[in-house]
Image (tube, rainbow, N blue to C red; front, side, top):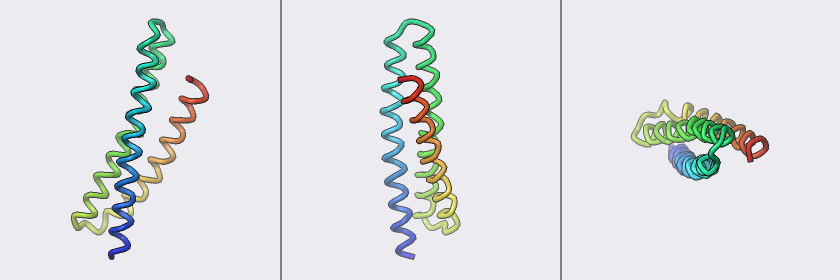
Length: 102
């Protein structure tokens, strides 16, 4: 059981760290769009707003990890699945923004 708690704590830390990185990245993209006063700037703002999706998945994953650590043993599998989904969604979002918009 101790190994499972260690796994949950590791996922919790990684999810919160990823949420922080996403928040900074989304802020950077939004600020870049704010600097442009044209239709292109509006596109950057919309792309930045789309970055809230992986951010919220990260926070949801952290919530489920905390639920597991509070004693709900059935929450570990959803936490792992949410974390994997978070990694994929964040990678796709970052690739789209970096290779298409920046």
